Structure formats: structure tokens, C-alpha cells
Image (cartoon, rainbow, N blue to C red):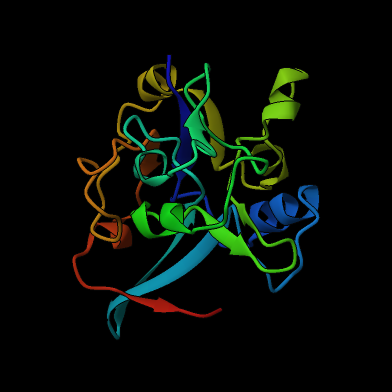
Length: 191
């Protein structure tokens, strides 16, 4: 079994509530790392401008580059298939940050540790959803068995022009893209 996220870009309004809920659960400073992040992109030219919001966290990859790059096994695959981080083993070499094509591991300067999505493992073990799932007012984020998510959302993809090739690490991420997200030319915008 592999666990992962489904993101519905057609429903996401870029409100960043998921990002704030994640930071709040982890007690991270506003200017610090964003284990769940929302980035906005624009494509096209007036009058046909498209906007899309890319909602990312750790993709709990099948072949995680962060795990392969970690010299101390601080980054590791858990029994449930998610990628977890053990701060006690971490020497803060930042190899995981360099290796991850998605930018999931980030340095928390205040704690001098690596911050990344753990898929709210403690909450899941208590029978709850990750906080980003429950916080989303548009219900555009789901978490679960990736095969079940794929069956439920047959039109979802894991390849988009804005993302690195899925062949690099095998992300357990499915996205229902909006039309703008399928365009080859785009640039990030700060909202």
C-alpha cells in the first residue's frame, strides 16, 4: 500500500488555509518553512490569462530522493509507505533538501532542523485526517491509499509542466489539473 495526496486544482482557490493549518499544527513561524505550500502561477497573455494554484507538500514518493541522499537515515520510508523524518538522527547536512526535486524538506532556522510533511502521522494514527485535508474550505485535498484515490479520480495525473518528471522519484501525488496548469509556459506570481 502507498499513501498519498490528491489535489483538485479545479476547486482550489489559492486561499492558503491548508498552508496555515499545517504551519499552525507544527508551530512554525510565519516566515519559516512551509511543509504544505501553495504557489500561484499565471500563463497566457491578455485577454486569455490563466491562473492556477499548485498545492504541494512531501509527495511520499515511491523512490524518495531525500531518503537516498540522507547519510544518517533521518529521512526514511515508514511501514505505511510515507516518508518520515527523525530529528534525533539528523545532522542538518541538508542533503535531503538538495536531493528532493519537489523542495519538500526545508530548513527551519529557528529549530535548526529539517521541516517536512509527515502526513500528520500522529493524527492519522488517532483516526483523523491530515490537517490540510480538513482545513481546506473547498475540499480540494484528499489523503489515502493512492490506488483508491486513482480509482476515485480517474482523470487525475501526476505529470504537469510545472512539476519535475514523475519518473524521477515516483510521487504519490495525483492532481486534477485546471486548463491553465496544462500549459507549457507559465510564471510564478506572488498574491
